[in-house]
Length: 324
Image 1 (cartoon, rainbow, N blue to C red):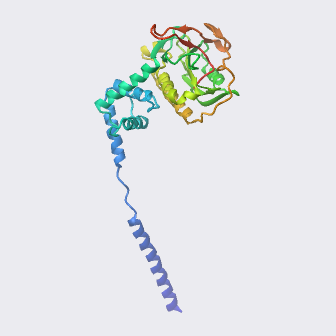
Image 2 (image 1 turned 180 degrees about the horizontal axis):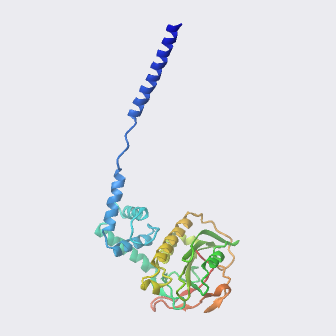
Image 3 (image 1 turned 135 degrees about the vertical axis):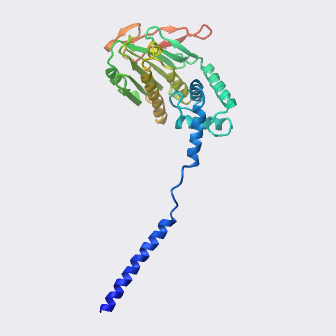
């Protein structure tokens, strides 16, 4: 009996040792941790090549990629995944080596293609005398007949939260696809109103007069694929308080607002473009005119402004009902 018990103990010990040995061998058979991948090295090389360019050139390249529909981000001269992906997509489109580093001929061709796209829509920087804001306007696209509108707006009431609450509220005909606010700095709202897509942004500077300034760019949803890049270029060109920017103030708010603007375009691109029953023109609870109207002293200005004597008259209205 004692001999049987001893054999059982030995058998169990051997079985346990066998299990440990097999487990150890299986562990040894697992591949060791891989070192930094070649993709990481390529990304580092792409970043180094991009950041070696002058800042003005980097920003010009990003802006050009926006115009060609490859980049959906902030024009800040920094390098990230969006910039890298945009560079690769552009290189693939022109059948260049997709190494993510622009050669001098590629950069020249990129900037030239973007300039052609700007010229095609008559893109020009305009300054609004009443609000004090400036923005890039696609003057050849803006017309009531085409359904494309660029509207300035301003408020003497510095309560940005209240304005945001009003303008981000959906209605039966108005669907909000994206909205974001940075308290006491800016907000963006985007979506669809009837058959139009809209993008709106308002910035705040308590020291300025008027302290809240913004714009709305609206265009037919049916043309969103072609006009989304234009909308992003318009948003990136907006300066609510150019006088403050010249004095070196408010740069952080401008950069943050631009980031939110690109996020709004990105979010809306992900939304389905189903039509919402139209209710006539884009809703506007305020009267037109060069004076304060409605709640909070929100001013809309219905002035027509000649952008260039060689271009047709572009209507730059103020509205508070179409936003992205």
